[in-house]
View 1 (spheres, rainbow, N blue to C red):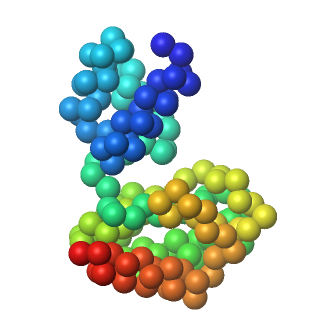
View 2 (tube, rainbow, N blue to C red):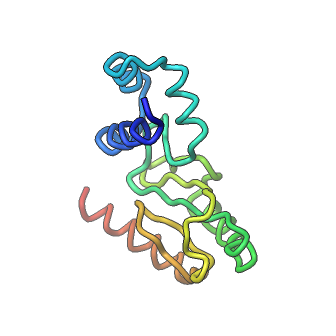
Length: 143
């Protein structure tokens, strides 16, 4: 099977289930006659795939040189402290999962990050505080 088609299948499964559990991967493996080892090879290579249940909001901090030169490390440290997590972890309340990713294509607005797939650019600590407050409040209102 062509890699591009397989990536689409994996993306669709992740979108549907929130992450790619072993059960989901076994179903894909069986349905498409693809060794599960090949699926694991693909999902561990590509940073956009998740094998554990995720928080309600996924924060992906851009790690491109442009973002790093414009303060991304300070933003990363602030988010880790504010949410009491390290990169790659989910908060205890399951509201946020935080990751670092390669370039997200927003170099003209560095530093940048994706929140639930939506780009946020020209970030500052003040702006991050506001964004996190909004997300926390929105989560509280829906629960």
